[in-house]
Image 1 (cartoon, rainbow, N blue to C red):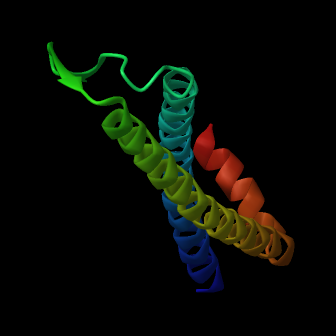
Image 2: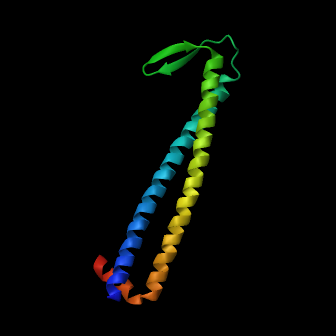
Image 3: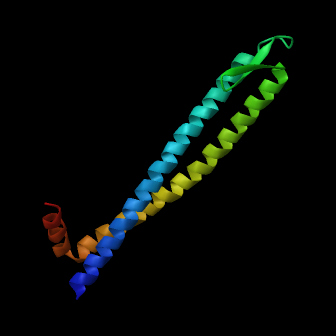
Length: 128
């Protein structure tokens, strides 16, 4: 009876670990994408700022380039930069939260294995 309860607890911990690591990887990928967006907006702004105001600037829309005033393009890039920074900050807090949850689940698993050393042998025999 206790063996079945231990096995069920292990399966539950394993499922939550798989779920949390998947979410963590997803958040890390989103952070990487937003960092790329932020960097692209920053570099574009760095190239736009030294240009004279009367310079013809074009915005890419699909395969088409549309003439836009420099100030409009700068404003759009600044907004993209702010949005990306806010998204990265939000994702960072999510990442920290998920990392804490993963650590907690790992501790639960360690405790379970220390309480029931026999389950470790059963797990090893199941995986082979």
